[in-house]
Image 1 (cartoon, one colour):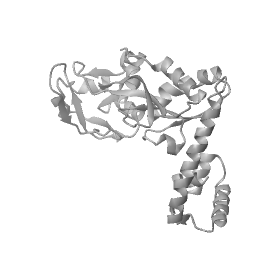
Image 2 (tube, helix red, strand yellow):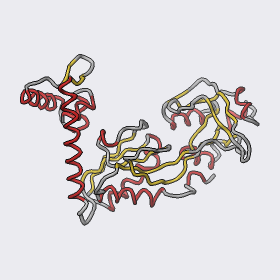
Image 3 (tube, one colour):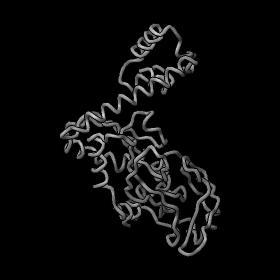
Image 4 (cartoon, helix red, strand yellow):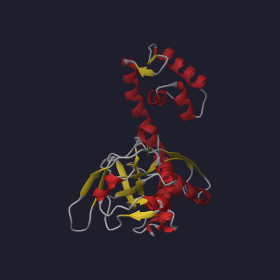
Length: 295
């Protein structure tokens, strides 16, 4: 409970993570401080921060938690069938569209597992946040994570027929300066879009527009509404392109792609429940030609 409060920065946040009340967390921390005879947290109206004693205690508490996790892994690795609570992390839009629909089938196949699916676009630390496994986009270079690639995620330039009825479609990346370009706020290159033709150098253009959002589905809603042109991942836009609701622009150019992987912390003993979920996701999503790219 102490580590949960240190990570959340509040009793309420720790309570939500642990599934207990704020008062129960506060009482337990008070008992711990009384037992140790030191203050572990400095409390203010806005947040809680660790004292020097709290920092020292956290370092050892984290080691104890990891030792406990390894002991649990060693025991559960001998299970005949997957069981127990499984904490899963996935990106917001991809998780809602492509992971969540698989969860019912997964849990029906493995009824002794209790799954907790968190959808978050932040690259959270799996160990610190208590996640067993994650689906994550992008290049991963951590030596403490095991990675199994699922597929490559592609992006395309899109606009609605309504927008194109009153705006001439761009013939080259430079033409985008004449258009209202809509942006995904969390992208590191949100306002700088790259295009490449095979055998030619990459073209990078700065884009401007009247709208940005931190959610890809909300971005596509604006494109479908005729507001402008956006760079959208095909796992969201693919079906709309196939149905004629969106037009794929500058289709002779490629935009940068990134790998999609299922990852989990390196462990001496891999829990059966983690292996079961990983194999299940690889079976359903591990392909060079995902269905959302078929347009």
